[in-house]
Image 1 (cartoon, rainbow, N blue to C red):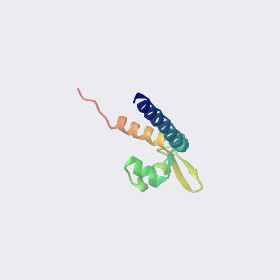
Image 2 (image 1 turned 90 degrees about the vertical axis):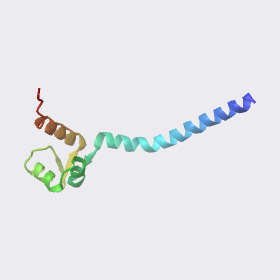
Image 3 (image 1 turned 45 degrees about the vertical axis):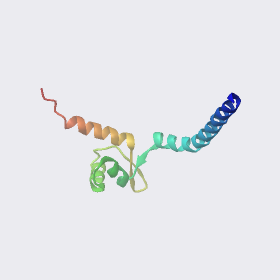
Image 4 (image 1 turned 45 degrees about the horizontal axis):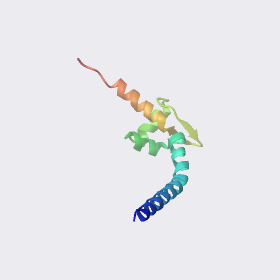
Length: 97
């Protein structure tokens, strides 16, 4: 009886490892792309920040936020948006005693 239970555990382990390996091989490139190259167009940046697309365009045109262009399209890195939001929080926070 213990040999059957051991056999089942071995099969479960091998199946789990195989499934994980197959899922990870497909997910890893997508995760890396998101982590290292995550950038948004104006619409995506606006959604991420919770602002309007026009507001984001104005920030770019007035050079109030870092961006780059691909053709005529503004592109903003997620890290830049995170830094900008953090700076806004700092500018708008007043610690009272």
